[in-house]
Amino acid sequence: MTYDLVLKNGLLITSHECFVADVGIIGERIGAIGQTLAGAREIDARGLYVVPGAVDGHVHLTDPRYAPLYIPGADSFLVGTRAAAFGGVTSIVDFAAPQAGGNLVEELELRIREAEGQVVIDYTLNLTLRDCAPNRIHELTEIFARGITSIKLFMAYEGYQLDDLTIFRAMEVVAAHHGLAIVHAENFSIIKELERRLATELGGNPRQHLAARPASAEGDAVHRAIVLAQMSGAQLLLYHQTCEEGVREIRLAKARGQTVFGEVCIAQLIYTSDDYLGSLERGFSLLTSPPIRERWHQEALWQGLADGTLDLVSTDHGPRLRQPGQPGFGLSGIEARFALVHHFGVQAGRISLSRWVDVCCTKPAEIFGLPRKGKLLPGYDADIVLFDPKQQVVFSHQTLNSAIDYCTYAGITVTGYPVMTISRGEVIVSDGEFVGQHGRGMFIPRGSWQNQ
Image (cartoon, rainbow, N blue to C red; front, top):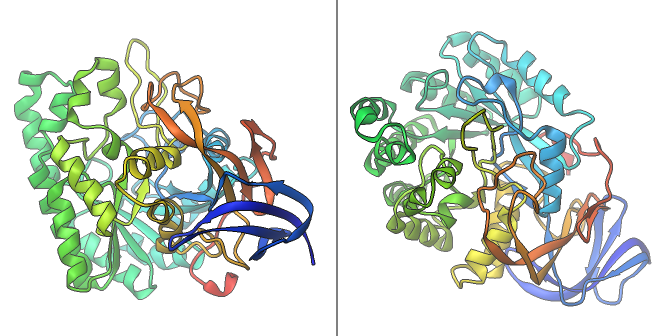
């Protein structure tokens, strides 16, 4: 049999094993994995890793309805997904975040229209619930009917915080539809009080941001989210874990059989609170909530990632346009994450090659219910990355493709980088050049494996 495209002689890395083989692609899907496959087009992948396209389960591309928590974002659907493709990412999970009072379904459909004709890779959305009104809870059923199965719930921040009763009721709807409740877990009452006390002492610098968000208070919020999910029967994903206390709560929940997943973002794995002191510019480029913490917390995060307590690595990518006279802030990383986890995880001996693929590709696809994504198997989408384990790249805002004039990972040199990105059988990035078409990306409906 002759395939449309064959990737030959590469080292295939899956979430379970590594082996040399050919990958045959027919149309948009993987047709076969084997030896001596023949194709109308053949690419020699000798010396390269052949891995599933990475899935970033937590990105914030420009969305004006996310105000007032965020000032305008820098990366549009076009710019952000194009940057992602350079970094070996073939699917992302963004957000629809209706303001309180807005109809959830109408706002979701508006967000999908904003992506049409822009995205260059495939995408899906979380629905962020920001309204405690009972009728908004009832609208969640319609959200599931439109292929959105993950609901984001905030425990903190003005314009986003939900009370425990609303979170519990929303989780009940999520459980009834076999969906995923996603929680931003922080104790907002403590944050507000500590910010008030520290305002004069630390004057609004990045150190104040950390001091007002103690790890013990985050651990308390993680515990509370787990309890609410247990009572409601919902599957739970806890976004951006930053501390030893939170990892411990997730580990205990898993040990008793509760379906709880933990996410860590790449910035928390690379930086510690010491990096706030490097410069004001660097400190503000690392501002995120919950914050980047001390080194012992980072060690607990790496251990949790290695032992399976934490399940996926995301970016929380959401760089902001620099305001006049202000340093840039907001995490970038949509393009850098895959290589950073390889460099600081695999190369440093913290995780294996298979675990790298698991936390960046396979597990995110499974947790978010993305059909045909995240695996090198016949019948799955041909979302494939050729990764050169020897290529070195120095990160800066000039070498990356986000629309900002700063870079969260500026100055870091990684060994190992994607050299080709294939999305549904189509080469879209090759040797540092984007060769795909704008708008070729597709919305991924979820909720039924009949789509496979």
